[in-house]
Image (cartoon, rainbow, N blue to C red; front, side, top):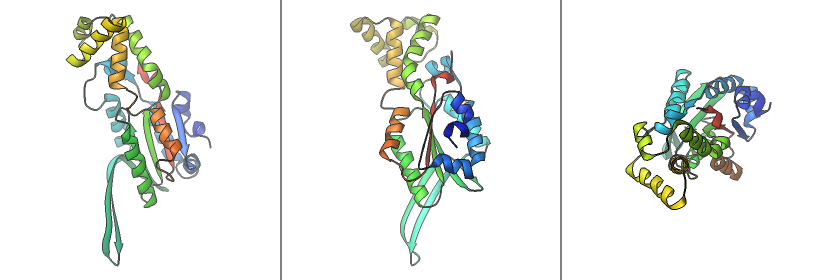
Length: 248
């Protein structure tokens, strides 16, 4: 089966879908229930734009909601502890903590959410999946991150939102309770002064660069690693969250 057939809700919603090492074939035969469950849970994602622009540090509320949904369906955090013995003497030990793990009749799937992290976290996740698969601990690894439409379109969406709601000055941002540090506010002012940007343009550019910059976790960074074979030969699934999850 194709990924679009396995994840019809995600495909219809415009999610990026990718699989390596016959992960889709393995799902279609041994893990149809897992595919159905992930298709349902991930396709319910949404985030109001005010929540997106108003959030400060810490884990995003979108991530928290998905974590809770996964946990409620048995996808729980697990610390895999691996030990190897020769003549009953330990020669190797390691541990790999995965945020969401679920055992099915055919095997175990490990799942990570990388909504907005530094992109080396992809290497950590994929290499962890690789080792766990080699040790027989998991059958598949999966990652969800920001998709290409989100990454490519978020700046324009923020700009349009600023213009439509009157967020066109420093005072307007402050009055709306949108959290920005003095450094970020000063950076916006400099863009306006030096580049001739409107305040909405400068804020959108500064916001997206700070929050969703090129060096953070998003589809292109993950796809590049999959193309290079990072995590191989563990069968891997990748989901990219589209811009359409943002509610304006």
